[in-house]
Length: 404
Image (tube, rainbow, N blue to C red):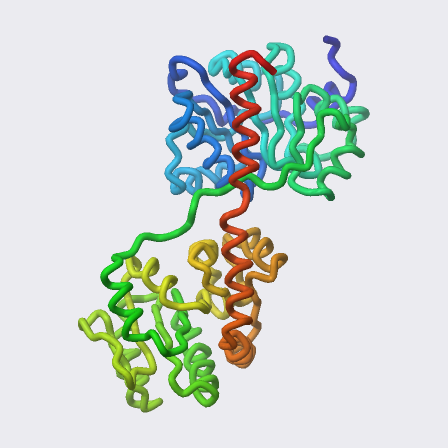
């Protein structure tokens, strides 16, 4: 195979000083499937695909990432794969990577292409798949125009599985052949459903059975006033409304309870003091992170704190979505902008910009049919993709078995 002009110019565009892949561990024995997450929002689905391969098929998995900043998230997802930053996309680094790991199959996910890596893999007759495929792009530090490079890079993939019709159009324009292209959708992500103690849930559900409930989770100190104001406003419409309040700082629970009782005249129950809500309780304060699985199951509406006036949302909105809780959030999405974008596009989450907006949105969602529609949409987002992952796994198995 000749060295394409576009690739030559691409490799002349920049040259890194060191290879981030230098300290490699030993290659696992047996079959090794290499997964590459080309974007942060592809990572959860790639990790879940790797889990299936490890647990269901008994193969070893190598997971490479484009960004070193994704290493902590990959490990937090509990992956059993070997995880490392991908080598710089230059011939000597890529050759060392492939010579060391000798993968039996490579799967790219997302929109990022690495032309030198694909070219060198093709020289080794390494079969390649592209799942969760988006509009193709070069690595951020190598962006530019190189004649024929994108078309030459997409050509070796045996199948290109697009996330949607828009991605498929961009992929066709980039040169992907129709015979290889299929709109398959997003792969599944690991369930974000948090554990809980069922006896606690059943007891609290019985106490709160006839009352509307909403949850303000991980509320930053500077957001407490907005949450209190929203609850005060909606109490005028629904006098039996209960707020489950989880402050960002657990040490705030006692002071908050005293403030709400003294300034608002509300009856407050504090779980940290082993208090349970009663018929007259307006606010139930919970201060343990281990209680979130319980909170999401009790509240049909959840406001995720840190997003309104805090430093950014620190909790994954998919946790609440997995429990069918309608979601309210502020403009500061933190590390979860992609998740909120997906939920917002499906009308499974609603953004609020102020304390008054929070009260209005909360009052609107107290209508059971509206909360149910939004919660159903949220649950659908978290449960989608299982069939897509199964289809990708079927292709992987066919290639490894030599029948595709």
